[in-house]
Structure formats: structure tokens, C-alpha cells
Length: 327
View 1: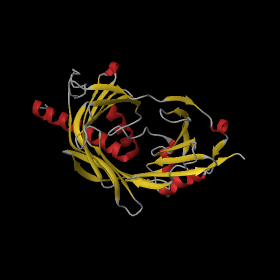
View 2: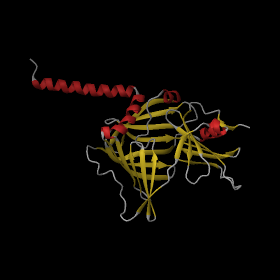
View 3: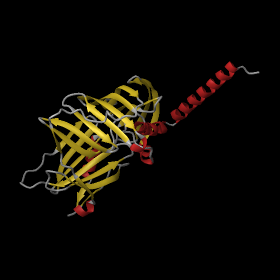
View 4: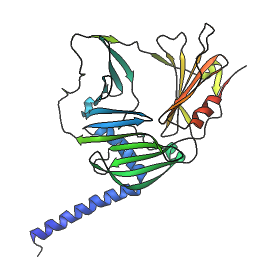
């Protein structure tokens, strides 16, 4: 006869084995871990503080994120250093509060991704352009993190280290590395806790009474084709494909700005093309880097070309050189 205590111990061991087996299956497929981490950032409710380091710049931010199911996602991010700023996000719609003098600038825009919701969905693109393997375990922000490493297959993208919470599946830390293996940009939770709440009283900005609100002018965006403008992009870096092309009517600019986005499954690059302004004054040209972000500004055939992305300099250079104009 099996005693009750023995049955309980057997059941506990069985469920423990199931949990270990499930984690082992995820470890066997690090691609699946990244895919689940991307989902966890949208699905879970959490509060925390993360530190963003880009080159010599370091800033800390407080985030509160809630998923109310049918009512959607809500997030509030407060910058804790320097000039007060905060962002309120509902779905992909974002309002940014930026106090300036005696006014509060409100900038409404669309947001594609922000930490920790920065990991892409699993795709053939990312598998074609990166290799992946597991590292060791490391404690990040009070949580046990599993290290996953993305290794680029060529010189056109960065190596990336990703730490994922072994319990919740949430992204804890991400770092971009140079070809010399130096960390050039990283973001990581210093504090993190999962929460359970049903109210949304927290979803409002911390503003000073008596100040006026000024809504920043919104851009108008329309679909566009480079063929209509008499130019094209050729000789793209391998693995990048165009995912978006629009024409932006930016307040303060005399001409629309053409905006193209190229993507390799993980990293994205933006290309901006616009006619050079009148007056005989040419825009400033050149290149600069900020952490993992590289920017190249040039002028060709009466157009200013700006390429920006979290990719190595060789990538933005090849994209810029690939813009050709019909004679």
C-alpha cells in the first residue's frame, strides 16, 4: 500500500521534473526563449527601474506596465535624471510630457518598441542573419537571468548579449558589443518586480498645477514610392530588406521628408531623403556615433540623405552610398 506522504512526495517530484523538463526544452531552443521574452514584455504586469547606457551617457528610468486584457496595454515611463520627462503609452500611441520653462510640451507619436519590449518575433530573417547560443546564468536586478548570445554572420550588424529571467521569461538586460567585444550600449533592470493590480490610477502624468499644455504639431504620414521622387536604393547590405516607406510632412520643413526603414530581423535602419533647402546654404554633413547608434549625413544631387540605425558604421555607409538618382 502506498502511504499518502509517499504519494505527495512522488507527485511533487513529478511536477518538479515537468518544470525542469520544460526549462530544459527552452534551453535547447534559445530562439524560443527570445520569442517568449518578447511576448512576456507585453503580457506581464511589472514595475521597475532600468538603467540605459549609451557611450558616455547614462540615464535611469522608472517603468510601470500593465496589461488589462481586452482593454489593452498601458505603460508609464519616468526619466529619473536631468530634466523631468515622462511618457504615457496606450498600445502604440504615446504622449511625451516635456516641461519647458512655464509650459509643458505634449508630443503625441506612434511607438514601435521600448525596453523591455524590444525583442522581435521569431522570423526567418533573424535566423538567416544571426547565430545563437546559450551562455551561463547571471543575477540581474534581483532575478536569475539566462544569458543568450546573438552572433552576427557578417560585419553589418552587432553582436548582442541578452539576459532573460528564468522564472518569468522577461528581458532583464541587453548589451551591444563592438567587433573588439567592448560593450558600446546596454540597458538593464536594476530593480524589477511583477505586480498584480486592477486599478489604473497610476496612469497619469506628474505635472505642476498652473502650467499650460501645448500640443506639439503632429506629422502627417502618407505612403510613398522612391520611384516617384526619381531616386532608388541599390546595393543594400546583405540581409536587410525594406519594411516601410512613407512621406512625412514635418512641421517647420518646406518639403516632405521621405522615410524608409530597413530591417534584418533584429536591427533596423532608417533612411531619410529630402530636397536641400533654398537660400544657397548647404546642410551640415558628416558622421557621428552615440553608443550603438551610427548616423551619416550627406548631400547628393540636391538632396540631403540621412542614415541612422543601431548598426556598425559600414552598414550606414553602404546604405547611404546606395542611394542613386536618375539623370
